[in-house]
Image 1 (tube, one colour):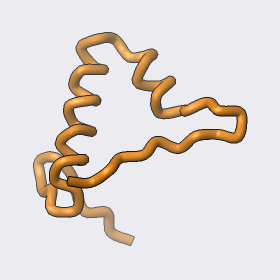
Image 2 (cartoon, helix red, strand yellow):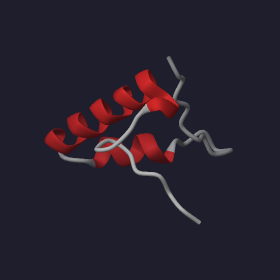
Image 3 (cartoon, rainbow, N blue to C red):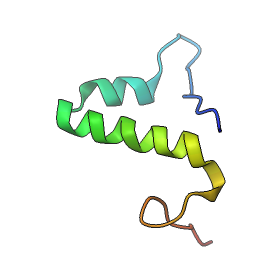
Image 4 (cartoon, rainbow, N blue to C red):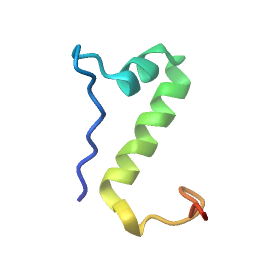
Length: 55
């Protein structure tokens, strides 16, 4: 299992968490689920969940 760590600014704010908190509940649940899947499978995760970035 992988460990997902959100970036924290010097002032203590966590932009990703703030973004997630601002989402409508339906979208937040989907985003958190996707983060949980990424945490579980990490670099072995494949499409349709992630796509390789070229360049």
